[in-house]
Amino acid sequence: MDSAPRTYTLALLPGDGIGPEVTAEAARVLDAAADAHGFAIQTSEHAVGGAGLDAEDDPLPRATLDACLDADAVFLGAVGGPDWDGYAADLRPERGLLRLRARLGAFANLRPVAVSDAMAERSPLRPERVAGTDLLIVRELTGGIYFGHPRERTAAEAYDTMRYSVAEVERIARVAFEWAQKRSGRVTSVDKANVLASSALWRDVVSRIGADEYPEIALEHLYVDHAAMEVVRDPRRFDVVLTGNLFGDVLSDLAATLPGTLGLLPSASLGGRVGLFEPVHGSAPDLAGQGVANPLAAILSGAMLLDALGEGAAAASVRQSVDALLTDGPLPADLDGTASTSDVGAAVADGIASFTLTS
Ligand code: NAD
Ligand code: IPM
Ligand code: MN
Image (tube, rainbow, N blue to C red; front, side, top):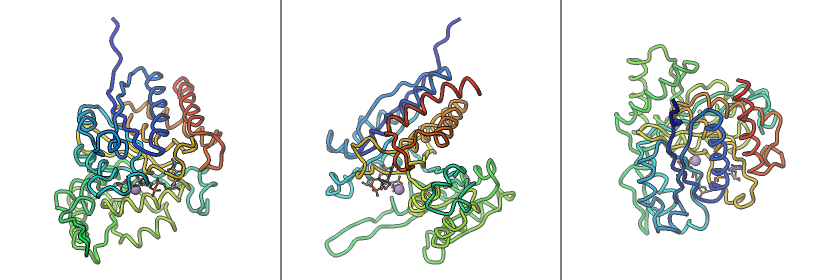
C-alpha cells in the first residue's frame, strides 16, 4: 500500500544582507536530504528584519509570526544592516528577531563549535592548540539584559536591566547538564558573579541544580573575562559552556576564531513547540550581494533542524557531506577558496546522495 511521505512544514525567513543568499543554499541542501531520505519539506517564505520593515513597517510582521507558530520548524538567515540602523530601538530589525525568539519560547540557544584537523590548519590560532576542539555553548536566549525592564533612553542617559529569575536559570542549567550527560560530562558556567547580582543568583542556582540533579557532571564556574581568555588559550578544556544571553553572544563570536570564521558556526534555538535554526553570524553587509558568503553555517543549522525533526540519518548525511567538502573543496573565500556561495551549496547537496548510498 502506498503511503504519503512524511512531510514537514518549514517557515523560511531569509531576512537581510547575506541572509537570503545563505538561506537559499540551506534550503537546497534540506531538499536534497529530504529526497535522499524519503521525506518531504514544504517551505513557505516570510519577511523578517529589514525586509519586514520594508514590506510591512514591522521587523516581525504578524503574518510571519503566525506562519512560524504554525510550522514544524523555522529557519532564519540573518537580519539587520546599515539601511535600518536609523530606526528606533523597538523597530530595529534585530528587535524583530528577539521578539520571534521570545514568542517561540526559544530560551535555549545551542551553538556547537568543533574544529577538525583540516580546519585547524586554517585557524588564525596555532593549529596544535585548536585541533580537536569540540565545545557546545548553551546560551540563555530569552532573558537577561536583552529583555530586562526598565530599558530606556532619554536625552541625558540610557539604561538596560540585566535580570534573571530562579526559574529561568534552572531551566537553562538543566539543558546544559543534559547535554553534558550526552557529551563528555563537563559543564563550565560563565558569569560575572563577582560584580553582578543577576550573576550571583545565576551561580547559586546552577550550583544547586548541579549538586541536586546531576552530581555525576563535573561543574566549574568561570568569570566571563577569564572564560574569554581560556576560549582562545585552551579551547579543548571546554565541553559544555553554560552562560547568559549577552555573555553567550560575545563568547560565540570569539569562538569563531577557533575554526577561523563565523561562516562555519550553526545554531539551534529550542524550548518551545517550534525550534528556530539560524547561523551564528549576521547579515555581513560587507559581503552582501556578491555571492561569496560561506553558506556552511546555514547548512549546518539545517542539519540541527533535521535532528530536531527526528531525521537524524538525514542530518548525519548533511554533516558528512560538509566534512568531505572541508577536506576536498570547493571552498568559499573565508576558507581561502574561490567557490561562490551557490557552488558550495550545490557541492554539499550533490554529496548527500552519495553519502546516503554508502552509509
Ligand atoms: P556579521 O556576523 O554580519 O559579520 C562579522 C564579520 O564576519 C564580517 O567581516 C563578515 O563579512 C564575516 N562573516 C559573517 N558571516 C559570514 C559568512 N557566512 N561567510 C563569510 N564571512 C562572514 O556581524 P556584524 O558585521 O557585526 O553585523 C552586521 C549586521 O548583522 C548588523 O546589523 C547586526 O545587528 C546583524 N546581526 C544579525 C544576526 C542575526 O540575524 N542572527 C547576528 C549577528 C549580527
Ligand atoms: C546573534 C545576534 C543577535 C543576538 C542580534 C542580531 C539580536 O548577534 O544571534 O548572535 O545578539 O542575539
Ligand atoms: Mn551575535
